[in-house]
Length: 217
Image 1 (cartoon, rainbow, N blue to C red):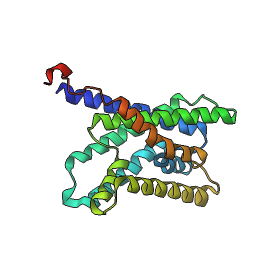
Image 2: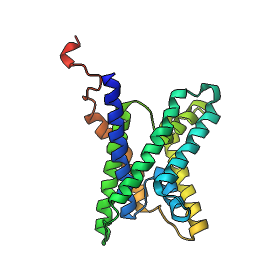
Image 3: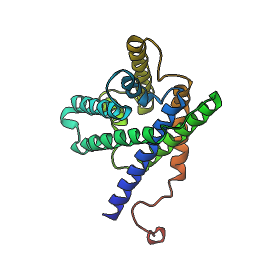
C-alpha cells in the first residue's frame, strides 16, 4: 500500500513539474512542445484555457485508444481520464502563477523556453518512474503500435509531427498567422526526450517499493 502511495505521489509531482514546464514554454512565446501545440492554438481562438483544451484533447486520445483496441483495451487505462483533468488544471495554475513574468528580450525568451524544456523532461521522467499510468498522449501512441507493426520511437516522432502540422493548419486557417509553433517547438522536440532519458538514469536508484536494498540477498 505504501509503495502504491509513493508511486502516485511521484506521478503527481511529475504532472506538477510538467505543467509548469508547459507554462514556461507558453511564457517564452517561442513555440510550445509538440504535445501542447494544439491545445495552445485552440486556446487562442476558442473560449477555452490551455488546460481545458488539453483535457479535451486527452479525452479524444482516450476515445481513439478505445476505438483502436476495442476488447483489448485495458480498463485500468481509464485512469488516464482523471490524470488528464489533473494535468489540465495544473497547467492552468502554472500559467496563472507565471502571468506577471515578462520576457522582454530574445535571450530571456530562450531562458524561459529552456526552463520549460527541462521541467517537462523532469516531469516525463517522474511519470515513467512512477509506472502507474501514462498520459493519454503516450497511451494513444502505444495503442497505435499495438495495431500497426511500427516501433514506438518512430510512431512517437510521427505523432508529434502530426500534432505540429495540425497546430499550424489551425493557426493559419483560423488566426491567419502562425502561433504556437516556432524554434522553441523544434528545441523541445529534440531535447525533451534526450533529457528525460538522462534524468531517468539518475532516478534508477530510487526505491519506490519501500524495501531496503540490504534486505534483497
